[in-house]
Image (cartoon, rainbow, N blue to C red; front, side):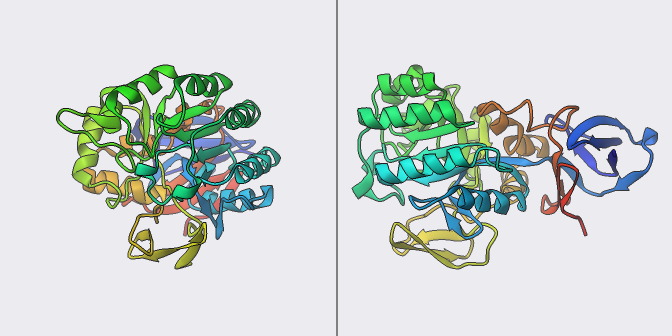
Length: 376
């Protein structure tokens, strides 16, 4: 039975359009038609957009991705984010032991087919301790042959695999092997030079992790990793909470890179809960005033949802709603190769939609053939 949603402005993945109705049948978008031609409609108000994709979530629903994570835990994380408007995520393991990495990969393989599970993001342990952020420096180490073999096998078997590494801790040959196996290699937690970053991108890296954070900054004579991203063609994730990156800095970066910068939440297990504290490798993470920090004040992920990030971009940075919405949907879908299913409202795409108020707050989530979160 077909359902027709009418009355909202429709963001189809490229532009906001008025006067359109969205016809859904069999869990997919069947058509976009003029509202004047729609019959037996379900009336909605606000902005109807493709549900979001988040390529960096450290947890959700009270579960932090760790060496104890199971496929059931990954389902909990995915479900928490679907209720926040995110149709698909890459659950993210930060720097840990080889055994923890192997366990999370095994859990990921067992979770294939779970609603919302797009693959995994392994952020470390092959980083630069000089840019460790909240990662445990005792667990950071260069990539070895057995690490490379494990990651390449995972890349071949998982729907998607993103690997954040520092070019100081992996050779161009290792980066090329990972890319050749299908992994999205992302540079991050790195104090590398502009030249070393360029060499890594040439070897096959095609992304940067949480732009500006935990990386070498752009100077007048040493552009660093930030400069290599802004002057190049690699994609880059951005935590748009106005805490990790100042709005003026975001504005400059988005002017330099009209395409390719996408939104991530970098959220922790707090997502979808009211918890105020959690443990990260035995260290307390505190949730206070919109920030997540270790006890020493180091930022430890973000207390952020993608609708909040979109609002920040539009209201504080000054970009268009269309661009902000695309940064949470079409751009990440393209990066990990799922643009045939997600990131647009178009015939044949999955009927995974969000309904937003004019201030971009989330008011409804449509998943498949019905409301997952019905608008009030």
